[in-house]
Amino acid sequence: MTDKHITHWIAGQSWTGTTERHGDVYDPATGAVTGRVDFASIAEVDQAVGAAAAAFKEWRHASVAKRTTVLFAFRELLNAKREELAAIIVSEHGKVHSDALGEIARGLEVVEYACGIPQLIKGGFTEQASTSIDVYSIRQPLGPVAIISPFNFPAMVPMWFFPIAIAAGNTVVVKPSEKDPSAANFLAELWKQAGLPDGVFNVVHGDKAAVDRLLEHPDVKSVSFVGSTPIARYVYETGTRYGKRVQALGGAKNHMLVLPDADLDLAADAAVNAGFGAAGERCMAVSVLVVVDPIGDTLVEKIKERMAGLTVGPGCNAASEMGPLVTGAHRDKVTSYLDAGLADGATLAVDGRTHSVTGEDTEEGFWLGPTLFDDVKPGMSVYNDEIFGPVLSVVRVGSYDEGLELINSNPYGNGTAIFTNDGGAARRFQHDVEVGMVGINVPIPVPVAYYSFGGWKASLFGDTHAYGPDGVHFFTRGKAVTQRWLDPSHGGINLGFPTNN
Ligand code: NAD
Image 1: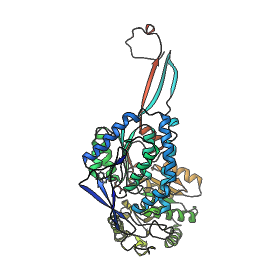
Image 2: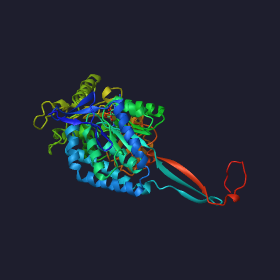
Image 3: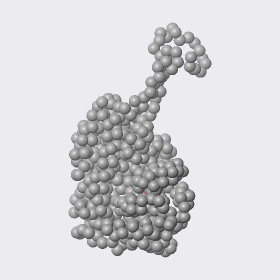
Image 4: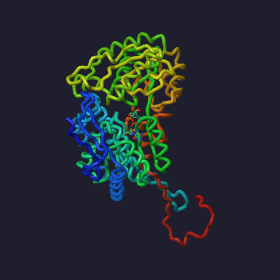
């Protein structure tokens, strides 16, 4: 079935033109092409930005009360229709249904946070900063903002940004991943039903051509990007060169450090959940398990037992715990690391190619079962590269210090976790580790919506994290006002620089 046509959403409606370029959309569980997505040209991106710029003229004046009302309505609709949205995500991404519901729940959290915008954008006020002079600050929207998102969270990642952007009075152009584009259109329709004025939320589909146009378009005031590190770096460098505010979140290689005093059953559960959930296609997935010996053999055995029991199958089957990879090309790339790891001298403790797939019509799907490498060392490609698949590497170290050194030497710094029952060691780790998000006996420490999400080093370019207080800061600019209400005759001439008195 290839009849699904996915196109842009501009000024409150589906785009009606025809486009020269398009991409195929797959059902990763069956390998079948299920739809076709339009790829925007420069002219089409300009149309979307034009709609956003026109809508900004009105939306920036909308009262905080009006904006909040629309956000609450959107929140209700999203909550009511999350099953429908989850099914769309499963059909194009491949993740299991419960996982899709999880990403929607985490996106909803940000919507709920943005419903508190009246409180979040309150400024400061200082009465009588100088004699008869008051000073206060206000925060105002930027204008049209661009959001460019990856395939792995087609609903949640855009929702890290647009609820706050819209609540703060900006207008938005989202460029979703071309691999699973339909979720963004579904969200666009919800906004319309929620009463958001046309043009405040727009979607353009496409590839590099669309991204490049957003980066250089003079009316786009900021860019929020999430994706792989090379593209994040490119987006940051290009966007800032064009004078834009840019936050570009990149890839990851997340290490989980297990100390000998840890609860090993808890650690084994956590490693399997965080290593193989969403088939490892999460930027916060645990991809490296750093085990302080002598517990290595015991922990590896516990992990292997759990891996053997995992049900791999189509995301729409309630029994499935892990789905396929997003495309055939990505599955082949991930699988190539199994041979590379073996050639580099790592031990292939569990070979995911032999794991059975439970489900019908799956012969042509993009499958690879959970895979475990032991005796991995820095320098091997399975250690160095972000594989972004169900491949977990075990590195054995002799001490806490050696483990910490390994983590801090890694170029990425998105997430990390320590498993221990020693509060002192955990506290030291949280203080010394050079990573933006840290879990203590928690494997995927994605911060709640009222904190901010972001990695360090090659995992984030820019100085502002996503959502939470950083998100509010990113999508607004500050203005400081100094006021005096006095008869001008009380002024007097004084050419000196103003000082307080
Ligand atoms: P990707 O970098 O291939 O694509 C991300 C976006 O950039 C997509 O919209 C894509 O169309 C666009 N793009 C791709 N190539 C481009 C180019 N040459 N020029 C301009 N734009 C381009 O990433 P992906 O494969 O969709 O997603 C997986 C990656 O995202 C992983 O590296 C993962 O770690 C990362 N990720 C990071 C976070 C985080 O918070 N740090 C969250 C989710 C995903």
